Amino acid sequence: MTKVVLGIGRQAKALAEYWSGQGATVVLTDRRSEAEIGSLIAELGALPGVSFSLGGHPTDLLDDADVLYVSGGVPLEIPFIQAAQQRGIALSNDSQLFLELAPCPVIGITGSAGKTTTTALTGELLQAAGAYRKVWVGGNIGHPLLHDVHDMHPSDIAVMELSSFQLDLMTNAPQCAAVLNVTPNHLDRHGTMEAYTAAKANVLTYQHRATQALLCADEAGSAALAAKVVADELWWFGTTLPAKVQFGTFVSGTDLIVRTPAGDQAFATVADIQLRGAHNVLNVLAATALAAMVGADVAKFSGAIRGFAGVAHRLEMVRDLHGVRWYNDSIATAPERTLAAVQAFDDPIILLLGGVDKNLPWATLAQVLAAKSVRAVSFGRAGDMIANVLREHGATVMEATTFDSAVHTAQTVAKNGDIVLLSPGCTSFDEFVDFAARGVRFRELVNQL
Image (tube, rainbow, N blue to C red):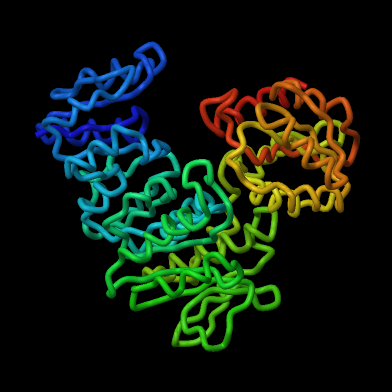
């Protein structure tokens, strides 16, 4: 039988390498041409048992298939996937295969915002606590954990970021699962908030009873999923927690507190957090809850929190030039995330907005920008739409065409004391391969000023 992988990228590479190593036959299919995909074809083509079908997805690829692995971002409604389902062929992805194979406990983290920061910090906390032989961090954060499964040991632990695309196909859930928040995102793929929320909820509903779950008391979308929890142990995180909550993390005065049935214990202070914004306080509370849930010593958390400077492209300080501070928040691919970034600053802001819209609501962000007197620069495919919405709500906006021209427009109006913030609220796919490439280009342009 053949393993068919739909969409050629990082996830496909991990699948091809794993199954080739198992002696399986693997066919990778992509609508793009060899010239578009580049060196990945040459690299994977050298693997035993691996072949390609490019420029489309002929259904005869399914004739000998026992499973179809779908890469993240590929819509499940396309005819090729529908044909596979009609034939009774199982659908899966690299994350599901990893969860089937992992010999160690797995923490799975999802949410509309903050999951990469939370995943990275959870890994740092577990490393600092030293409760496990080795801590593996990966998943949607950029490194498929399937690459490492052969090197994992039962005394290790894996921390895994999970996207809604990966969760769409979930049938195996991690032993410890967190949903940080559920706000509008990826509606261009999922269609409705109900479908998007259902995908997120899969990380909870496919758990078994002898597991653990974590939800946010401060965020309605996450809190509403409590009814979906099947795990025996439910933890909460939030700025405050009701007295009836037995397990969780919260803020009391200037202290960060973990609560267990043994009582409340302070483990760090708000001042220890080096990341900007109230949303990052919640990310720290989530990460510390997850590390505490799996037995890490909370007394060792404060040093790791103080030493954690964040993840690239997430409110990343790029440069202070003539009193103008330039921040890279390219990860913000939804207006909700941009709103959190804007609210992290009290200084005057020039905000770069644009790219490809995901059919998300912009009105709330526009109202806040008007109230805070934020000056926006719109660009890219969604630039005209964004400019129109902002003006309808009384916000100030300048229009640029390309990303580069938006950066230079911001430079012409920025003055001492201003923040120039790239937090675009859109995906990057009109000009860049992903948000990281957009962030790298932003750094290049700012450092050339």
